[in-house]
Amino acid sequence: MPAWTSPNPALTRAFAPVFDERDDQDLAVDGEIPAGLRGAYMRNGPNPRFEPDAHYSYPFDGTGMVHAIHLADGKARYRNRWVMTTELAKEIAAGRRIYNSTFAPAPHANLANTNVVRHAGRYLALYEGGQPYEVDAELATLGRYDYDGKLQGPMSAHPKIDPHTGELLSIQYDLESGALLYLRVGRDGVPDRRVPLQAPWPAMIHDIALTENHVIAFVCPLVFDLGPAGPPATWQPERGTRIALVPRDARTAADVRWLDGPPFFNWHTVNAWERDGRIEVAMPWYDAFSLGPQPRRLELHRIVIDLSSGVVRDETIDTRACEFGRVNDAYLGRPTRYGYVGLREPRPGWTPQAGTFEAIARYDLASGAKDVHRFAAGSTVGEPVFVPAPGATDEDDGYVFTFVHEEGQAQGAFHILDARNLADAPLAVVHLPRRVPVGLHGSWMSG
Image 1: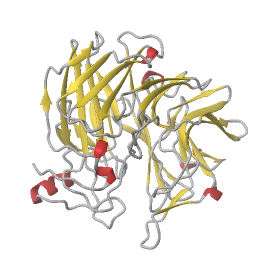
Image 2 (image 1 turned 30 degrees about the horizontal axis):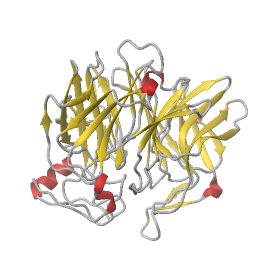
Image 3 (image 1 turned 180 degrees about the vertical axis):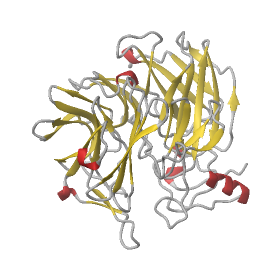
């Protein structure tokens, strides 16, 4: 299998790809894997097989690779596989790169590299520039999945799965036209809503928020123009942010309510809920955004929408830089007290890479109080995924899972933290014979 190195910062250190597909059994564990945990933690992320072109940038580019930790009977095994997209299969047959990076001239590939979820019995590797790819429980690629022809174009990389109804809900976007599509898929895996919408300008809607009655999309003023002249996107704060409140039972675009909000940018949301006549959305919040390096504020905020007046208020929860927020998914779309984020907290004397995080925090979303788990100097951590303890009845009774990359180490690690005592030493550290690159999003698949 070909191996290569690149000077591109998005392909070095914690981001450097790996080139083998492994099956490692009965892994060494420091501590104890909590009793009763049975299932698989799967995480997707960019891992180009062939050296990309000079336009490659994180997090937009790189063929997807899913990494899985299977837990059962106090033991752990590891498995990883590339998502075998049609485009990757063609590149393997040719023995070279064929497809270009996102902001280079076409052709472009479906990278299937951003997220992996399980819905209606299917494991879906997701990328917002293409249709989902279905994999099986052991990560073999089964093929592109279009809901039996009902999904004509791409699907969001961040659909929300309602834990109460079992529905999957998403909003997909088109960077050229600004067209949007609201999609609702029932517990049975059959789409029952496909509502075309129109954004006020072409914008990236990477993630959405879900409540008991609404899907919320933020059209931020990072305005895209993919024509041949000029940059592909410009920050235009004078436009403000347009907020779409989509009733979950919407049938036409006329059912959607559009509100005006202050200018900001967000990649992700932590959680949202409706209470006392308002919607609250917790999110990592940027005061500006560009596709190039520039100083910008990244903070944890709360967007409050008054459903009666339509007034939108922006409140600061904490000014510490954070991203990749998660909650206990059993409370998704409902009032939650706690959110878990990757936190920017480099140790003295060590320079982290842009776009990475060095600690994990649990926030009390009402008060802003936080507990922080600090890793060893030189560590880069992934998205913190909450996993309920077997039989849990309280929101915070469970664990936080994450992969950890240690600078300069050929081996990797998977950490299990006590969500209620996050600052404490890990309950278990699973040692991996090979490092896992920093990636994007994943899910716990119980059972």
